[in-house]
Length: 385
Image 1: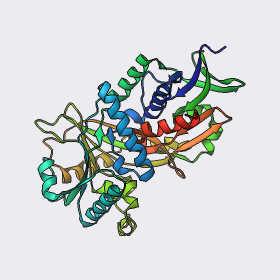
Image 2: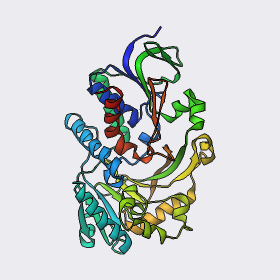
Image 3: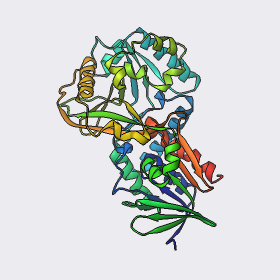
Image 4: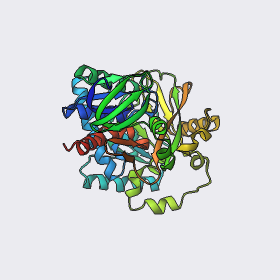
């Protein structure tokens, strides 16, 4: 017999699962959140913590802008590490500057504030920025950063205080559709009854539905990142995205000149080989996160990506970063990689098993920015709110 009956059980305690639980609770539903580890370990806590709707296509920018409002609303009640210092894209040549000008017009049409910065304004605002690199920038003042591990822990603590039942070290081994709902079995013998289940974790999806998982078109991206030692007497505000990001991010693909500019690029470069684009973000304690890279494998063959860090990639990231910013120190305190899944043919993977078990995963690199806004819409759809 199931112990408790819930309106919703969410499987997976990353940012996507957590905000499904958040919005379900806000809608008055009785919610349980099951996380297989003793705390979130995946992509949610292995990224920069940049919330940048500016980098998304029109559809996901809408979700990202909703996410901004949700993060800020929570921050007004509880410190979840939100800092509104804006994001800037730094152009290194005339082509990238052209894309910034075109994106500014697109965002003006979408009523999303952005401000074009001259080279002098960029150099004035961002200490250590190389005058040999920057041509200008596009600044988004509404955008925020968070400290990922702090944010997810505090949001989950907030949900527990509000009555959401959160269970850690709760590995789900089976979901059974019954006449009156879904029974969720956990490895330690506990069971939960729910009207609906949402599975927001690729690992749980693979374990619970291996055949469906194998038939999906999910792929996994491996990203390498570095953390400098604390920067003495140095502050780098907000999110810094650079020319390689301009040439990569979805938002710029909507610019009129994008295809022509991409067609002129040399595909035989180390940056293209490893999917490198250079981001900077300073943590609250003074470290700077640098990255990142992108290596891909089908989700069924994710082990092909290996468990090691590729020092050739790290060396390339550091070399490119030094061309952009003269930091007080480039001594590295920590190196790591993150893995996230994404869908090859769609922007997110969704599948319904029978009637009341819903898989939603493969959000890719959009998770920190898009999950909060997307989850609200998804909950409203599933529960006809």
